[in-house]
Image (cartoon, rainbow over all chains, first blue to last red; front, top):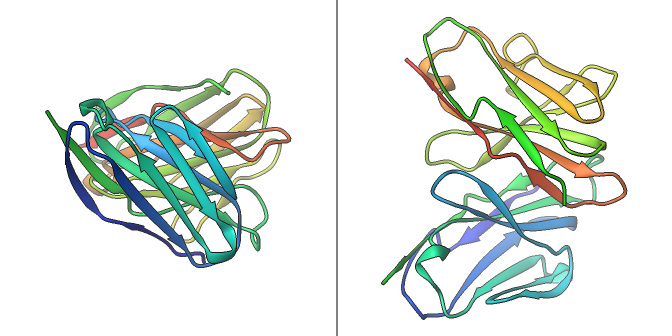
Length: 111
Length: 114
């Protein structure tokens, strides 16, 4: 099946800093999503981005489908950004809509 | 976006018992899924809940252990049967809106088996 690899696995930032999270995938995809899992376990949708660039406030994401990677940018980080960020993808070759998840990037933003 | 609720939000169960988790979506959806997240791990797909037919299970998951029902387009249940401590996980349901590809998740059910 498709391999979804995220880097870095862990990241510690001081409040106000910027960061880039990366997601590499091993097959062509028709769905690529970024999620934030908060400390209570809730998965929050950040971006649905199988290709192109999107922005939402301090967050933006870019997927280069031809090169099989996606980037999540966090600017002016806040302590509430702490948690685990997951990238998940569905390959073109699979029927249905089930997602394959990466192992996540654990982010801690300190005051 | 869809609103997805799950019940219970958490439970502590004894070894050998079973727990049924409910998932309710506020609109009709064609695709619903059940995922498991073991402590400190990523999410793993258990099965696709098919409306009107048997669920489609991923490798390593079997119907006897994780029976799933999907009686209509807004509701599904997952039962964790004959539980052992290794079943302690967060169980999440998700749904894809008809005609779109974006997947939304419920808040999860945090299960502890003692």
